[in-house]
Image (cartoon, rainbow, N blue to C red; front, side, top):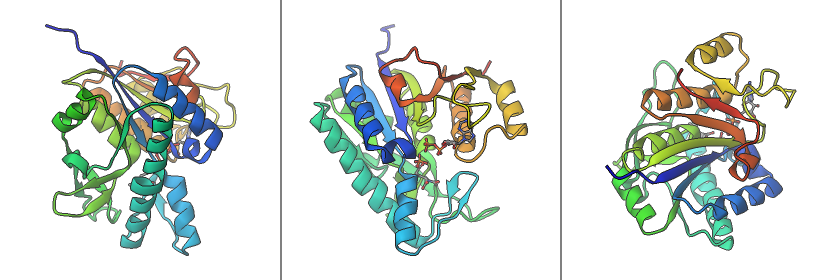
Length: 262
Ligand SMILES: Nc1ncnc2c1ncn2[C@@H]1O[C@H](COP(=O)(O)OP(=O)(O)O)[C@@H](O)[C@H]1O
Ligand SMILES: CC(=O)N[C@@H](CCC(=O)OP(=O)(O)O)C(=O)O
């Protein structure tokens, strides 16, 4: 059997997006990588800021946004509009032929509105299917898909979906076509035992240590859904996931957190 080509699935978080210096550096490095690749971005912080400016209060529960109809309009404008198009334009500046994608484009990611019980998250989408065939076609013609955190329900409704979940689902869905590696990039050097100490990087987390870290509340807020997504992807046959600082893209030997099942 022919060996599969490698595919990098990288996700950048909200704090990187807000920091122009880190963002430019990350995108310049990402653009340089010659292998097939997909980028996923969040933008939660930007959406919360715009909501506040408009007098709309944001509620997050366990790292996930309660997306009212008003808040959905904001997240679509920020994620699929300003943030996505700015990232695509920057990648084009660096010679990377990026194409901006929401889940509705090319019917790439379909989702169901999350049931209102036990918690009503509003217009939040749980991913139902990823159209690996369409995404693969884009990659085959040399494009670099850049996904925002917006999906659709195939009935005309856009939905807000956590960007970490989108990254994990894309990595799993592209595995039949490529040898896929999943990489979460954020402002810290990895998962830390002490959030105030950048030297406290946990270099390896497996299922057992993950459960212990959760129990001890060492991992909180946005790190909770991030790790949950990582382990779901590992359970679905992804070999390993990396959580690291933006510098990992140009320096894969830097200290960071690697996750495996065992
Ligand atoms: N043990 C931990 N190690 C590192 N970060 C943690 C930890 N527990 C909670 N966090 C928080 O999780 C955040 C990352 O989650 P989130 O903001 O959703 O990520 P992203 O920047 O990828 O959007 C960090 O900024 C940090 O505040
Ligand atoms: C349902 C849900 O929580 N969606 C996320 C999508 C954006 C995101 O994931 O952004 P970061 O990666 O920057 O956190 C939100 O609106 O915050």
